[in-house]
Amino acid sequence: MSTILITGWLGYIWSHAAVVFAQKWYDIVIIDNLSNTNLSVLEKLTTLIGKFTWRSRQPKFYQIDLKNTEEVRKVFHENKIDGVIHFAAFKAVEESCEDPFKYYENNISGGVSLYKVMNEFWIKNIVFSSSCTVYDTMNVTPPYDEQTPKKTINPYGSTKRMSEIILEDLSTHKGFNTILLRYFNPIGAHPSGLIGENPKGIPNNLLPYIYKVATGEYEFLNVRGNDYPTPDGTCIRDYLHVMDLAEAHVLAYEYLQKNKKFIPSSAGPEWFLDVFNLGTGQGTSVLEMIQLTEKAIDKKITYKIWPRRPWDAPTVYANPSKANTILGRKTQRTISEAIQDGWRFITKNNS
Ligand code: UFG
Image (tube, rainbow, N blue to C red; front, side, top):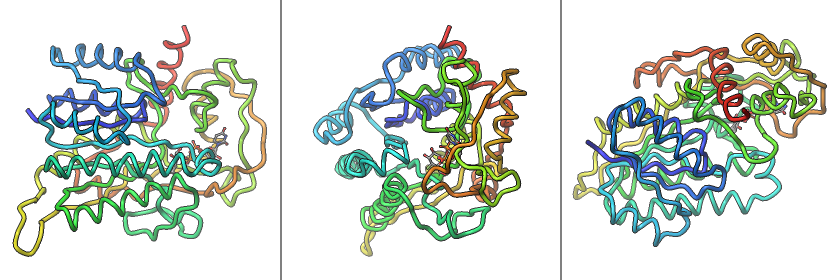
């Protein structure tokens, strides 16, 4: 069976993808520098993989910073890797505006170090975690398909777009087979409640913050603006269950395997590159998310209207039809299920 390398600074998304890949009998090697997660995620992942796949073969874990090229090289020496699912990135938009260098260093330099080693070892298959934040969400009306004009408005988004451009170059000139996945807003958790989203510090994202209000840790949610040009004045986003997102990675990797090329020809290397949105196509406002959460977990969510967050786009949702048609993905889980699954994780981890 094929071995994939998963890179993560996002304990949240990569852990869910790892479970799905393991269920499909892939062998998994993980690189994470543990900057946004800790080893307990790995223990839980091991439990889950054992439980759902009855497998004795567990993921091999390396605590490495991708910028350390020599250490990354060792991983490629020690394992026969077939392809890479590259998640590792910092992702807090506001923080990226305060400290862009941290984002360039981690998201760009870390990636370049990885791609360099991939190229050396002739491992040219990569699925990259990009974001809908690459689209010109301020000027173009949604839904956004993959052809939507691009314009980033913060360093985080710029690192995603720059990474896409680097991978486009590496496809054209170095024969990389690349799939770019542009995520909309992943939420929820594995239904077991064993793994989920547990950000260090104050959560940046909406649902993790709402959960802190539901547990009583925070008194209220700050709704960041209610004067946007949307039906209830609050921002609209396309929330999708993290398991739906995780499953799409396996479909994308299988699609890449079917279509990959890297036979160098006299005209230069041959390559494959494609890009897919991962969203549901359904928009939900902040106030609707509050109502859905209250209903799904039977808790009151107190909120106050607060000033707008700088650079928030009023409405963002996907045209997901390309991934649905070509990869054969489907949105299988509702937002309410995602909220309940995420809540199960929070309550298990708080008890
Ligand atoms: N919001 C609040 N209060 C909060 C947190 C968020 O009102 O405490 C609002 C935001 O203003 C926004 C909406 O909830 O309107 C969603 O905010 P999130 O931070 O959850 O999600 P974003 O859409 O801003 O950002 C997410 C990811 C990014 C990704 C981006 C792409 O965090 O990594 O989607 O649109 F780039």
